[in-house]
Length: 253
Image (tube, rainbow, N blue to C red; front, side, top):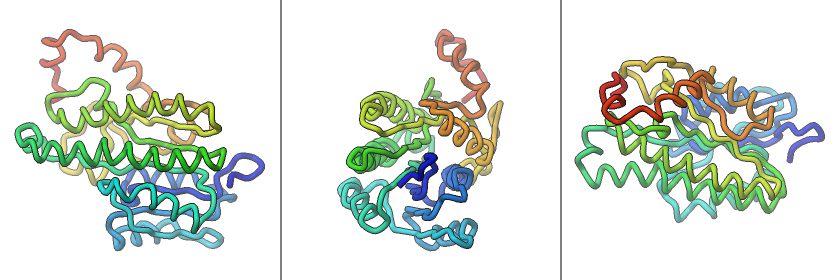
């Protein structure tokens, strides 16, 4: 459990191969952290990430996790608690970008992406929230996206899932707040990562490490929502209110 000064001793990453998630975990580790759990769909890739985190006095474990397998989520979280004790900080970072051409036209492709990014995320967040409520403490960090602030035609299914997830987390986080559990929603812009490799960078693009820096600062500052970079909050306060014809002409996709 958290130590006397509130530092997480056990950190769990759902989406153990996520570049942003891994960066957040690395930034959140302190001298008080004892255990890091990387929950990954691909064990070998998870072990490669674990090798970059392991150090003396820090136990890093890789466990199998499938964000799409909603039926397994409650049992998975219970098994984590049985094995590792209290879960102090849980980072939910799994998501797929999808093929915009396919998801705009194929009902099956769209449904598969929506299931992972929204249904799977909601299922796992509630499973974790139940455990943290039972403990009476803990923090949840959920990676949203500015893509959900005003969904673009370039990738409407991905943006729609992030809009839905962000909205859910705002309401669910309000409910958790009165039960000793914190939720922080992180809204990154374009991040240079494996997911976006080969894509044209959007304005105000950033890196996983910069997102992690903003996230950990917000977590320690008791924030509920944070933008990365912070200037995006100002930008989208304007963009979200633009008339449709103007919005569609912007070179944002």
